[in-house]
Image (cartoon, rainbow, N blue to C red):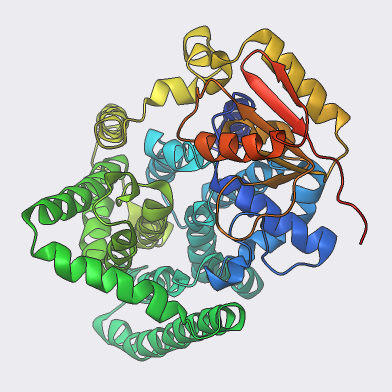
Length: 488
């Protein structure tokens, strides 16, 4: 099992790095890169070149822990850090004697399933803080169940630092540990005695939730006076939901996105022994409701755009983490109580294969995600469909030379598809968000082969800069070198 866990971790990391090399990550991952790196190198508190003061948007403080990796390896640091956490979660579960071998194999297969790889891949955006939820939830659950206080404190702290709504995930995990784990081993009186700790835990997580949102509001009003986080975001989502529920089209979208997320959970239960699967789904039906509700509420920020529905990786990752944690609690018992598995090994293997096939079909039908293309990007067919394949060899050589010649941390403005070449530099987004700094170089694709990746904005700004500076063209690419700003 340990070899399997380490092999999965290593392969996933290699596939992720290859997809990155193929120019297929263009957005939020680079925001996280700058948040962590700017903290380590410049002492800036959640500041990037896209949103500016990101601390007024989300409590994404876990990214600061990646700062040393980001400073040393650029964007690869995010992939490496996430892989280390995933590998640690799988390795620790594989060594727990309280879990049956059948369940451990099922859980590891679920953690390494096509759906899980899709969440790790996070197509287009490349990485979100929410990717840490599955590993953080698993580590928190295992450390609480094993009575490892130091490990529990560290994993729960990591969980809290992911996002302002992490308390919902933490509360679900804590209640599962107190009320679900080893339930069959405890007499009725002992089970009732868990009620008081559960209530106290719930109150504690309520305090964490309130403190998180209070801090977020303070950051918002600090950098945007007169505007609170609740007024700016929650009121908007409430308005969308209230108005949308009166619209048949929005109700259809809501039912569709909820159905796809719940279908993903039901399919994942096929990895576990039948008794554990039944208990997991039964407890997810009440422990998972707040998490699903919060993610549905968050999706309302984007209206009825299916791209940002509940199977969008940062949206589904919290639900996935809670589901995996509840499964561990449902299977946690004394080894002598486990007994012989009721399902033959061949039948369990067939169910696991069926679950994987259903996951592949689900993410393709709902998200347009072609699993084999992403999971096997090294093959000629999938590699030819990466965005890198749209560039000519002359253009690739030009951008690679440019990225080597420009000193690191130099401000470079370009469109999203070229961010990979400049992840060691200081990328400047060509977006009108008020966080833009003056770039020393502007690089755009005049053929507009990547229109979704800020191409129009980049060309407009390049045309403005080109009015006073010479434009160098190689193939369909255009470069303006503005040079460093004049000293004041």
